[in-house]
Length: 394
Image (cartoon, rainbow, N blue to C red; front, side, top):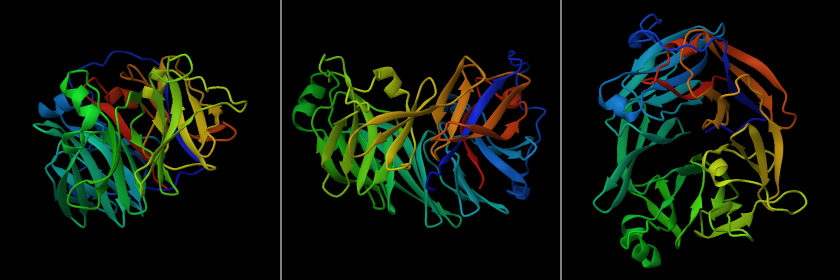
């Protein structure tokens, strides 16, 4: 995982003429890449295009879309990965589908690697990719799969827990998940068995190791938080959260949660304005927020629906609106990818003559400059093929 630069990349959907998709396969007229001839030569940006898990189960393909500096695209076929992620490190592009792990540089290297077809996280550590994949409920809890791949080989381990929030601290990967399996105990277990769905929360180390290593747990948790890669600073994994029954009125309160990876202790700090008032935030905004995986200016950076880029001070919880990302479509929505890039996409981004624009936005000033326009990307998308992630190659 790279350090987050001051400049973020924003993918803005510009709807020139949004029309319904025509034909059963919008990719039919695309330029396809022969895997034996694939390379990053001339590639400026890469995107994951994939069906949802049901479509993958039906055999519908996915692609890595390789964009040149003129905005033209070529498609590298894959078997698909719902919520698939990309990492670009040391001039190599790492990605996976449900049957293989890949590294693309001057050539494409693949390694057989059967796994679930829903991805939760991806990090690159010492030339190896560490991916996390959602395997679902088991007879005693919840299972996810950690796959470590590199040099044409892949290794798999199972871990207990549904890890929507992960973080890299040094060379280790940590995850925050609802308590499950042997870790669901006490009041949380009693309420869970009674059918009210209450669980606690746990911090574990999910890599390296042959299984998860429990670091700490807390009791019944009634909160919402965004998923994705969180920031790790001074041995603390920090992320925004919304306590549903918190606040003076009992209507909920936004907080900053920090788990200490050594002690397992969880500390919460209210999110406040510069004047000490509760920072205005709804549960829905928090649920659909996106986090930057690295701090910027000693603050956790995150983005909420509506385009507000927020920065929360790790020591005080003071939260500022750094800027608001402009966009051209009133129907556009915002999310943040794993490398810290801002991405805009419309609810129905399908149809000919729909361009995607990658811009760089300064977090402090909010000013943006266009980095790349991808021509007619909407023309190859469909309800069976979505943009899942993208990365600018540096």
